[in-house]
Image (cartoon, rainbow, N blue to C red; front, side, top):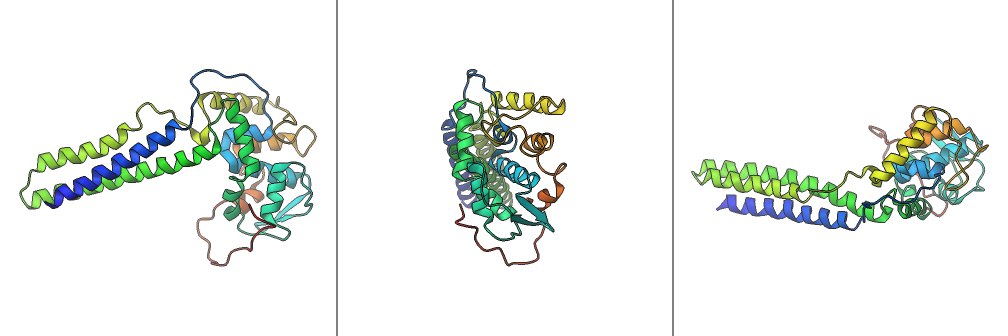
Length: 274
């Protein structure tokens, strides 16, 4: 009957996506023991707080505060193309030599570039985050698992409707539909919450640096990002911890995803791209 076909698809999608999610989670190698302590730099804290895109935003903030990048009317321009580190080199490469609008289209690419992945890999070695390449697979599997559960729930309701209309075994169909959705959810049992790939230790380290930033006690080291004396230290610490919106709103407006873009015309490629 029709409802059995619908239930089969519901079970297959929910359980298949759930199995993919579980496999992706198992590859993250989430640590269960405490690792060694190490002083973190500006880019390290930015990665813990907001992932690769926050690191890119922090590098752009450094360049803006030092006069090497300008923002006007949501247009970003690199004024000094000589980078100070590998992350800034990626920013210069993606933004390119001319004025750029719609930087939000480039920010996601920038957040996945090798220079920023290297920051994540270093933190993964300290057991503060999971490796960026594996976390991206995990994110895709997580989204697919959620979508599959929604689809299986809709198919289950449709199957119940068919069973009611044709005087079928409504309770049996309903039970299988519930099993399809709950079965997909069971694959998530025992998994840890990993915002932006940060482990429990990583979240604890971030909380410590956020407290130090609020008290004005944190001057970033040169390791993992710009150090003391490069730009406005207080602003950079706050950008790394909480983003651009409050401290550098003009840059935030330039890089954020707009609610609607009326023009279908995009920018040309950057200088080499990423």
